[in-house]
Each structure stands twice: as C-alpha cells, then as structure tokens.
Length: 422
Ligand code: EPZ
Image 1 (cartoon, rainbow, N blue to C red):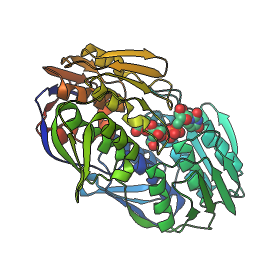
Image 2 (image 1 turned 90 degrees about the vertical axis):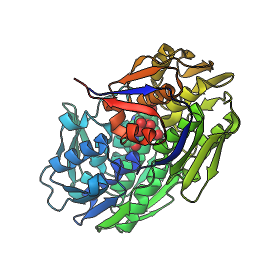
Image 3 (image 1 turned 180 degrees about the vertical axis):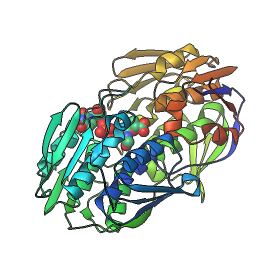
Image 4 (image 1 turned 135 degrees about the horizontal axis):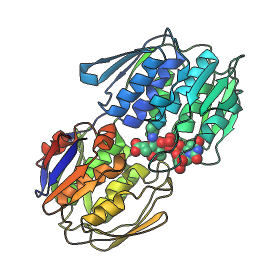
C-alpha cells in the first residue's frame, strides 16, 4: 500500500487544475444503461472509483472505452448481457447501487447486491428501494441482493423523500425518465451533480424539469438517445485545494473553479479570513491577512456546507485562532480524521456528531492513517502546514477521489511525494 510523505514547506503559489466531479461521473456512467445508443462523457476524472464503475458496467455487458488518458469515456449498452451487479464489485463502492434504477427502467429487471456499510456510516439504500417501488417496481431481498422486476415497465408516480438523499434522487430521476407517465420527486437533492445528471439526460431526450430545486418533475419517454456530455467540475476537489493556501499561506488559483459550486463553503472561508477572488480561469485563494479565524460549521445538503468538505475544514480549524464547533449532520461517523489530527497535536473534542476544535500555533508532523477518502486528504492538508514530516498511510482511500494529489500540490510548491508501498 502506498503512502504519501508531506513536509511542511511554507506558502504555496501557482495554479491547480480541478478535474471533473467524481460524484457526477459516478451517476452519469450508469445513465448509459438507459439507452442503446452511445453515451460519451468528456472531462471525466482519472480515479480508481471511475475504474470500479467501469468494471461494474463492463460486467453487465456495457462497452466502455477510455480515451485521452481516461478523460473521455465512450460507452454503449447496446448488448446488455448480464443483469446482475455482483457483490464482489458493489462492496468496493456504494455508488454501484446507481445501476439499479436505469437497468430496471430499460430492461424490466435487475439484480443488484446491497452495498453494505462503509467507514463513515451504515448508509442504507432504503430510500432508493422505496422510490423504485413508488414507480411500480416489485422488489425482493434475497441473500444480500435486491431482485427488482417491472415486467410491464415502470409507471410514473410520486416519490416523497422523508429526507434528502443524493443517490436515491439520482436513481429515481433515471428510473422515472423511462417510466410510463409523469413522476414528481419531492424533497429531491439539489446538488450540482443532480443538475449535471439531468442536463445529460435531457440531451438524451428525457423530459425533466426542476433540477436543482427540491421538486423534480419527470415525464417518461419511450426511449432515450445517446449524447456527449462534459462532467461538471468537482466542487469537493475544488474546495479541498482552496484550503491549501488557506492552511499554509500563499496564493493558489484553482482552474475551472466556479463560485456557484462552493457558495456556502466560500462564505465560511470569508468569515475565517480567507479571500476568494473570481478570475477568468477559476478561483484565486489567499489569506486576507496572516491569521485564519475559527468559524463554526454545520454540514447540510446542498446548498448548505458540504459534508464532503467537513474533514478538510477541520484541518484548517486546527490551526485557526480561537475555537470552532463542527457539526456533522449527514453521516453518523465522519470524524475519523480527528484522532489522526490529534496525533499531530490538534486539540479536538468529539462528542457524538459534534467536534470542538481549539486552534494551536502549529501542528507537528507524524505518521497518520487514512481511514476514508475525505479524511485522508484532510491529513495531507494538515501535513502541508505542520512542522516536519507527515506520512499518510493507506492512500488507496485518497486515490478513489483525488487524481495525482502529489503532482497537483507539488506543482504549487508543496513538499510532497508518493512512497511506493511494499
Ligand atoms: C453522495 O452519497 C456522495 N457520493 C457522498 O460523497 C456524499 O457525502 C453524499 O452524497 C452526501 O452529499 C456519491 O455521490 C457517489 P445520501 P449518497 O444518499 O448518495 C442516508 C464522497 O466522499 N441514507 O445523500 O450515498 C445516508 O446514510 C462521498 O465523495 C439513508 O438512510 O448520500 C446518509 O446518512 C461520501 N437511506 C444520508 O442519508 C438511503 O436510502 C445522506 O446520504 C440513502 C441515504
């Protein structure tokens, strides 16, 4: 297993290109199952999660050709040969559940392994299943697999989510796009990745309105065409790299960054004393004057503060002036980076879903363990500002969601290298 060695090396300067969004690409790829015509995605990120989704789709008989060093994914599900999404692949990545809705909608049956939990929480898929049942699916759980049937095809209905779920919204929208009749999805997720999925589906001929709001309406169509669609910029990678100059000084321009993708996050940065300037090429970030002030954070569904930036923000708060309170309201166990940050001298008190962070003058480098994707990058950020060396182990977590982090940060002056695992 590889590790990443980071040595605190002072202020950063330069430009970091932001890739296409992992969480958009992971729902755009299964959309190919909705049509027998080719779907091509451009600006795709080069990540291990994308490779896992590629393997899953190929196991179903989808042709997936990766072009331009992985930035273009040409897909065709013309000859679907298998309708079973196997546990061996699904257990590696929860987003695999997103093949259920489109496969059921187009083929009338699908068998998908339940994903099982993950490090940050139980993450059940009950809302996905209830949404499909509202569209007429007959579901049976057998030996850890969901057996879904819609022999007469799906029919439009009302999906009313008790709370916001990004993935369940995506499954519902994709399934409804081929259902007979109209569907209303209430309390829908409003994330930019949903908007991106809907824009792609509309290019394929889907009749959808309300994306980005809490109510999405879908008028089912008989079939969908192919399309070519650029994956939206990754707002979580963007926010992550915006924190690099915030935590260790200097000025970095994040290329491709757009303020509307990270509005609530930027409001918190502004409160903390970090300036964000919109440029022609993206977002330029620098501390306003020397110190960063502690601010409080509550994670919420979009457009609130993203849970996927909570760990990274905590790293910044570890060296801020004052005390900050971070409330994680989306997942039940998303503070695993806290004990690792404390190994670096951070002062953090975790009580249930609340972490109270008292800023310290300087963190000290230490060997630390990555536990999940966003926790691992928060340790990298902390290492950028820490005195001495920080060795982040188990970076396979990192490679799921960040392409070539050591190259991107090294390019702006960070002292960072990948240490090949034995
Ligand atoms: C998506 O996960 C993202 N993943 C997550 O990013 C992100 O943290 C999350 O949305 C919230 O924004 C992808 O898009 C691939 P949810 P998802 O359904 O769809 C509970 C990252 O780091 N829930 O919005 O799985 C669930 O347990 C990842 O890139 C149910 O109870 O998230 C959670 O507590 C991590 N039943 C809450 O809802 C369900 O059927 C929100 O989950 C579905 C969800």
